[in-house]
Amino acid sequence: MSSQALQGALFGGFKRKGVIAYIEKTAREHTAQLAGKDEELAALRQENERLREELSQMQTEAESLRSEAEEFRAIKEHLTELQMEAVRCAKEIERSARERAEKTETAAYARIRAVNRESKTRMDEGFAFVDDLLNATVAPEPSEQTE
Image 1 (cartoon, helix red, strand yellow):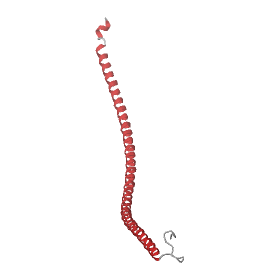
Image 2 (cartoon, helix red, strand yellow):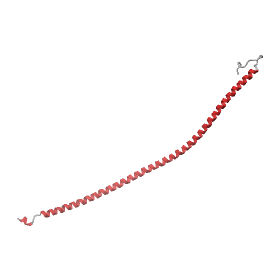
Image 3 (cartoon, one colour):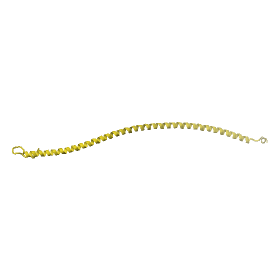
Image 4 (tube, helix red, strand yellow):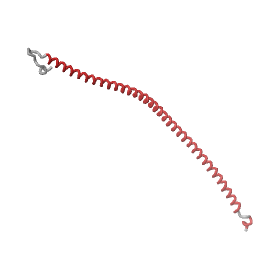
């Protein structure tokens, strides 16, 4: 309270009207400040409620996303297992194909050698037959030898 705002009374006090006016003015200012603070408080409460609702929505969304993430993790693990099984199967198929190819190749070479031997035998027999025929046709006749 400012002593300049209040006028002094004749005997060392203050004038009653000035004190009352000052108190009323201060009360009005204080009431105005309180009204302003009440409005701020109401606005803050509204903001607080909005933020609580937003937080609740975000928590719900986060829980949903956690569930989805868990599902995706399970799917990823399953796909990883499938991929590993596919790799194992591919390696087994490749190994089996190599073994069959080696067996087929071995059998083919054995058959080729057998056919080659048979062909050589028949050729040798054919050449022997041709030689015998040539020898039989080229042999001098007995009458020509004596002359």
